[in-house]
Every structure is written in C-alpha cells, then in structure tokens.
Amino acid sequence: MRSFARPGMRGVVMIEVLIALLIFMFGVLGLVGLQASVTRAQTDSKFRADASYLASELQGRLWSDLPHLSSYNGSSCATTLLCAEWQSKVSASLPQGTGSVTVNATTGDATITITWTGPDNQTHSYVTNTTVVKA
Image 1 (tube, rainbow, N blue to C red):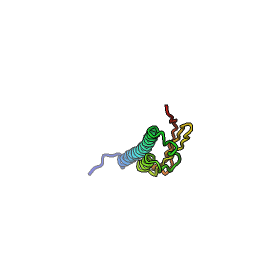
Image 2 (cartoon, one colour):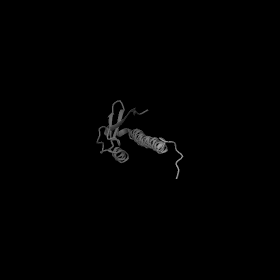
Image 3 (tube, rainbow, N blue to C red):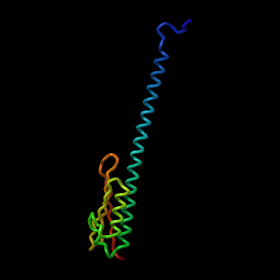
Image 4 (cartoon, one colour):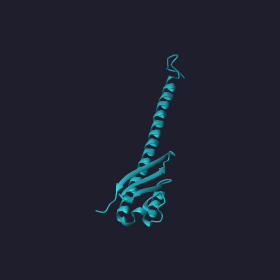
C-alpha cells in the first residue's frame, strides 16, 4: 500500500483533529459555566421577588389590622394571628427565611425586614419602610 503523504506530513491530520476537539471542549465547558451562572442568578432573583411579595403582603395585613398595629412590633409577633401566619409563610417560602417588623404605633411608621440564606450560603435581606395611619 502506498502513502500519498509527503515525507514529514504524516500525523498532521490527527493533530488538527485533536486541536479541533480541544477547542470544541473549551466551548462546551464555557456553555456549561454560563448555564450554571444563569441558574444561580435566576434562583437569586426568585428569592428576591418572593421577599418583595411577602413584604407587600405584610403591608396589606398592617393596613387591615390598624387597631392592633403595635402588636406587630418585633421579630416574634406570634401573639397576632395575622403576623404569625405571615412569618410561617416567610419560613416556608425562603430558605432559612425570617421576618421581623418594627412598628412605631405613634407615627405609624413600619419597617419590614426579611432575611434568608441563598444557595451561595450568603445571608440576603430585603428591607422596606411604610407608613400606616388612619385617613
């Protein structure tokens, strides 16, 4: 059997194929890394959206329960049924989620703080302020 390759050119095609495979593998690894980054960002975004929704929900509960506004003050407002339900929702919706409320019953100012631990084991928090007063 005769070889039509010039002397010194044997194995060049094999090297080209190996280089092409190496470039392809780096591309695939880049896509896998991009997918992991997108998934991480999507999860973080969902938790932030859930925290925002839960804070808005508690604002609505504060407005609907004006006579008992001072009973919402503190991180363990379990004496108020509406607040206890809200805190159980926070812990069920967010990983290691906790919620606290600081209410100044005189001025009606309320600060709602929700904290949770993300998949990156960092503590995140969402804080919102509102004023709840009778019109």
